[in-house]
Amino acid sequence: MSKFIVRRLLSIIPTLFVIVTLSFFLIRLAPGGPFSREKKIPQEVLQNILKKYNMDQPLINQYFKYMGDILRFDLGPSYTKKDHTVNELIGTAFPVSLHLGAMALGVALFLGISVGIISALNQNKWPDYAAMSVAVLGISIPLFVIGPLLMLVFALKLKWLPTSGWIGSRAGWATVILPTMTLMFPYFAYIARLSRGSIIEVARSDYIRTARAKGLKESVVIWKHILKGALLPVVTYLGPAFSGIVIGSVVVEQIFVVPGIGRIFVQSALNRDYTVIMGDVIVYSIILISANFLVDVLYSLLDPRISYK
Image 1 (cartoon, helix red, strand yellow):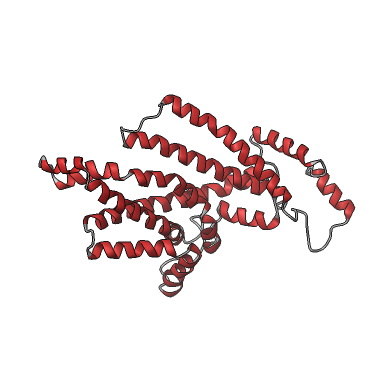
Image 2: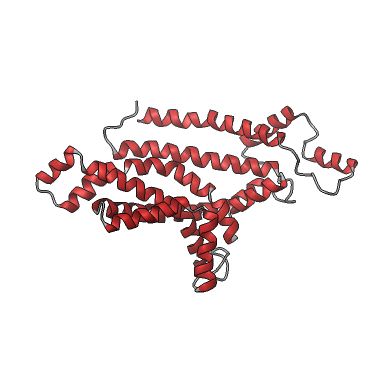
């Protein structure tokens, strides 16, 4: 197990290297640039700006300089936000997105597994049909529809919750509720469907019949035997779900004006702010790789039949 962990940790380095390299060149090949404006900048001024940011050098030289800066954990300056570095922008916004994503995933996991258990134990009955209908809606309706609908009902009509903002605003923690519920809805739906199908499959296994034949309480059979095996597909989904829920907060952060990394990513993409885009890509890649690594480790803890050599 320890050798597997070391190998996986070492494999992160070449993976990130490939991601950063491809992203660097693809972004630079896109039309436009951080200093492209509707009103043309005088050529002398433009040349001075490019020289200031070393963009007057050949692309390969820019690439090696950028890789050297990354090794020093320096993501460079922002081209469009004066007097701000990428480290500062991401350092301020990323905790907000991480906080929102963690809360949304936690709520989705709790509600999804709970609904999956209820649905599986009442297979082909009205609780099952009701739960799966909600799950289908959660998968089918996009976030940019769910968000405004919740805002219309709970903020504008009922006036129970604020329309936008974050914890530091006057409304306080009430600002968290609508973004969290919006972001968690599709993930709740997927987890509920995964849990239901997996629980039904595990409940039909021979060792579950044996446990019941021994006279164990139904609650013990469900919580100790069925759920432990049934959670494997859910754990598999948690890796990409966690990275997806942080990345997916781009839409939610725009709707509810949450000052997270998603809003910065959208703005930097529109402004062709190369260094900020690259910083966001690196952060998102690290989240995805780390989440998948943790899932592999959790696999062996949940199922003793799985071992890594």
